[in-house]
Image (cartoon, rainbow, N blue to C red):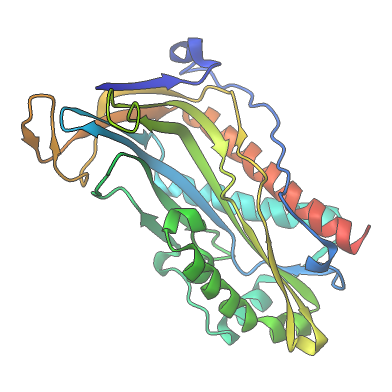
Length: 329
């Protein structure tokens, strides 16, 4: 059984930087697929919701055999909900500013809210939701994540678009919900002469992996590395109304790959995080334990916030670039 957590490749000196802000390197987001039909015909955009999904918990589990099992859980610490809300509001404000700078109009929040209300779409209670982090069953190996989804204050989270599909485990159902919700907004969007955008940026803090050592068992290992990244599961859902608002073109932008930063931003405190709802586990002495502990990933808050800002600026710039290419050329 092996459990190990590494700092990122650039973090040989990570323990020394804790009191020192660091400059994050630029990030660049490239979309896997775009086409002009997603945006053509309208020089304005409506942003009825802006979400950021903050990954805050991960668990890698490997079960090679009864006697070869391993699990490692990590928890992001040093960041509170008010900070997540502040950064999400900044991200939404930045997107609007980038559109304005590019010469693309943004529908006022009052009109975007009216559009959502007319479509009968549900907002997330409290403008946030926490998902994952509970017990589960692993056969072989698994990596699970828990996250907090926050909506911007002036563009609150929508239930239909709230989560990255791969994290819900209900991708087809989620996609159907989004299409149905979008269809109810075609007429309002046409009347506003605007394309609809619903960004859902996912930010992660580690790359975890589990190994069982082969098909027939062997050494079980669970581990990973601490590194900040824009997860490729960061869709921006789109809707281009057409023909008087009777129908339109639904679509979406999604990064072609994860965008990883090498900037160190945290230290690791082994056993420093209480993981409350991880179920039971059999330890090395075959004793059942009702509650396990995990490693705490303790952020340097100024550095982590700087990385979040670099991430949403890059993500927003990619959105604006895709729209501008279609409507301005």
